[in-house]
Length: 372
Image 1 (tube, rainbow, N blue to C red):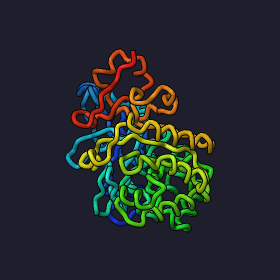
Image 2: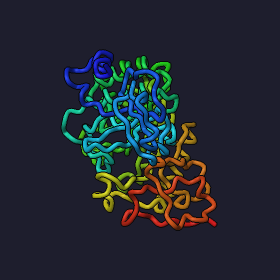
Image 3: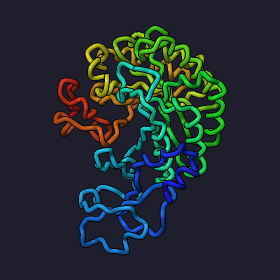
Image 4: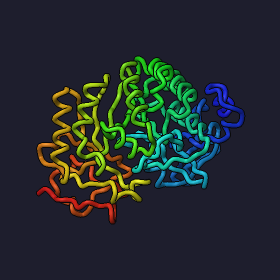
């Protein structure tokens, strides 16, 4: 019944529903059938499962550790190898769903290197997972490029508006699809009166620098046009900048450009590079320690302040920033991928600090400086 409803409600192509692997995790026997996903009962022991538990579930798992680590109603994902991971949980400080691995950019620091295969069924899975989870907390939508399947993305937004209307989405996009004004207006219509927003990067005010970092000639022109269309259409935009060796000297100019030419900017986010995906293989060509560009960082922040645009610093350990910039830093690294090295023990700023990416261990780690 779930598959039939999935096909009916989301207008799936024939056979697409069979790919869905998200499930609702239950810690107690459900009293009714879910319209969106199959339900799996998680039990701490064999003795806690009875025959009556099977009325509305597709299977059950005996795992005391899993039982202790999830809440009833969390969303799990069965991988192709049969492993289960928790995809959406009310225990997390932030949840994100991957809706495609395709992208029309090839960023030199891409954390999710693109794959050239059709995977629009991931949007369907995400829609069902969000409807089943039905949270009022913001959920991130990531890729790849989430807007690459344009008509499917519009259907995705319509489905969320109908079946999970209280869930605000923060959608990461390269913004190039918004260079199509008709598509932009369709998205804006679906986002009106909602709390949805888009995180869109612009890495430089110089076309050649931006195009080099995203790996596509002409991307700067489409991105700027897309940012203008989206802002003028009322779509809230979080403008993202990642400092690298290629755009450090341009941080302030980039902030000045967007503050003067774009509308509906809700925030500018400057993000320390994460050592994962292609960033690892290009690390020594790209990465600059924050201590080497504090002046440029402060100038960019000052430009945003003068334009009355909120600006935040993401993924920066506090010990790598001067005290006067600490209040701009966000404790941003998701709890499932951050860690604190031994040097952080006893640091008085630890509770305020987001720490380091787990992926930075080893050659990518920048030494912590304990603040006594």
